[in-house]
Amino acid sequence: MRIVIADCSAVYTGRGDTKLGQGVRAIIIKEDGAVSIHNDVGNKPLNYMGKGNLFTEEIDDDGNIVWKFDTTKENLTLTMYGLISDSQHELILDDEGLVRDGTESQLQEWLAANPTALGGDYTLIKREYPTGDGPVDLLVQDERDGSYVAVEVKRVSMLGTVGQIMRYVAGLQETPEFEGHVVRGMIAALDIRPKTSLLAEKRGIECVTVSEAWRIHKANRSLLEEQTATPTPPAEEEPKPRGFLA
Amino acid sequence: MRIVIADCSAVYTGRGDTKLGQGVRAIIIKEDGAVSIHNDVGNKPLNYMGKGNLFTEEIDDDGNIVWKFDTTKENLTLTMYGLISDSQHELILDDEGLVRDGTESQLQEWLAANPTALGGDYTLIKREYPTGDGPVDLLVQDERDGSYVAVEVKRVSMLGTVGQIMRYVAGLQETPEFEGHVVRGMIAALDIRPKTSLLAEKRGIECVTVSEAWRIHKANRSLLEEQTATPTPPAEEEPKPRGFLA
DNA sequence: ACCTGTGTTACGCGG
DNA sequence: CCGCGTAGCACAGGT
Image (cartoon, rainbow over the protein chains, first blue to last red):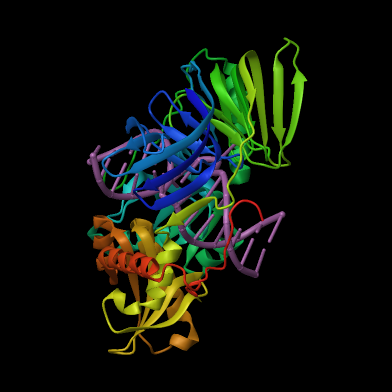
């Protein structure tokens, strides 16, 4: 990783256009070619370019160093009027990398294995069920009346989720397989924003907050891990898809 | 800005949970307290914390330096097993900051002033029109048949836009003011993804790609700026919404 | 302080 | 390679 502190300005063209006036900033160039220009505020860089760009160095008419980072679609040009610091460091990456917990995919996995956590006698039809308008997170069947429910799983559910579900439900209702069947929409999330819940209600979409059940599940799970301490893998079998597809 | 290269590990809890194993990484602490931990790949930090956190330093039982960055809702703990480099730099920020061009809000402003660029005899009713399900970017009226059109403006329009419009149109159709009137939905964007365009079609939402007209508008605009060359402030006064400090 | 929407979102996963 | 959806999204702007 190369770290340069320099008095510089920058111009970017590509997905949008930006101009950055003169100032002293930190420029970070990573091993994979990714570059970012930081001021002394916030987490996001002012300008940046992903890996896979072509790096070139020139000197302009005024004797300033000009760095270019180009791809076929984007260009970042950095002009340096003065160099304050330039250092290189060898970073070592551990092979585990960053381990995340509590992601949406984990939530989805858990709900697929325990559909009753959705608050009814539900049976899983399929995860990532293709609706024709994109895949819905879970498709389940309500055993009480045989109706189908398209479930969108979220960590945090905001207004956009409602439109997303409306889209999926509309897609399913157009599918011949669901001719004559009732298809409803549902949001299952750790946190459903008040306005979202209101709007969902208006659109006939059921909202289920699963944070409490999830917390208990996680507690039990870590307890189990402690007790078993890897004598045998707990088999954690996922119920296999059923219904008309399979 | 303080830049530390160290052999370290990190634990984060808050919006999610993450664990970062031991490795040599770059730690950046900015003037406002924002901190980020970078490996040598990509633009995004492995771990980070926004400004406004409480920074504390301790020594653990093994003699390692432990840095904590805490807010009421989040905690980032960084343990350092070895220090490779530690430097401080004074960055200077120009008062212009980053100037963006081609943003969605500029697009919206332009289309509000030139609704015929939407490809018909349209008249602007209102920008950011409240639908009850959130404000729609533009509400225009089609002078040919008196129908109303809810326009969602995007730089790049993807599938989610369709659900967004469906939501707005549904919201408007429920409003008493539009009782008995036709309300349609429209996407106006520089780039509409093929699948998005297809789905929008299916849902009766019109798609207009305005990239060409926008390009011409921008060209004319910069030409105008050159000609006038600041004899009088071009009245074009933008309210000067400044970025970081204020 | 919370909610809402944009972003050169970045990034990973699937086709 | 592109499309699509998530993210500890970050961040700005409004209420």
